[in-house]
Length: 111
Length: 114
Image (cartoon, rainbow over all chains, first blue to last red; front, side):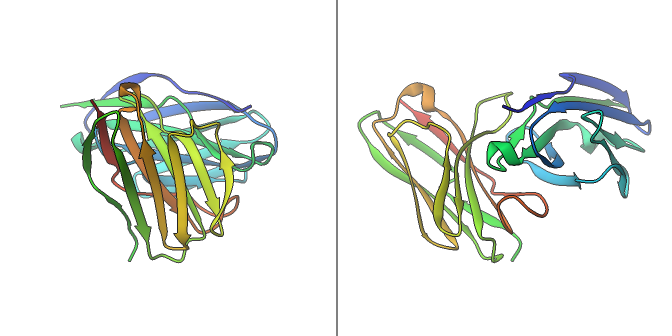
């Protein structure tokens, strides 16, 4: 099966930087995704990595190392509205290419 | 149109009722999904439809019955549910199953079984 680990909760200050790590195990890796989910709302797509390296999109960046089974999501210039859960999700060919989510990391941004 | 639309937004049903959840997208996506999400837990995959055919059923109880009438619509028929089935039911779509970018999620149906 697929196994995905990420920290349960993180706290950071407005304007700061936070890095959310995700480690995974899967057969036939076929992409890693990061989603943001505010309480009671649907997940919204943030980033997609399938090759090693850094993908930057505004204040959010995502990094992937396939050999280490490791990714991180970097949130810069934190704003209060960034308080949400951040979900790491992995797609694996051996699992029928289904997208499996990690438990999510709740980020709390304080003034 | 870049949205996935789910109806109803909220549903309360008794254990003997039959109801249906509906999902619609007009982005030309050929893969559609049903996920179930309990409070403070990640979404869990239930079903995958690819090109209008059921390709993955994650051992979901038969009281949940999916249907894909055409490439834009996805239904989830509910019958004889249990209180523990109360959850947020999310529909999602993607260009293709297994390639490309992320899923677009609908805002979900919050289901309460009484």
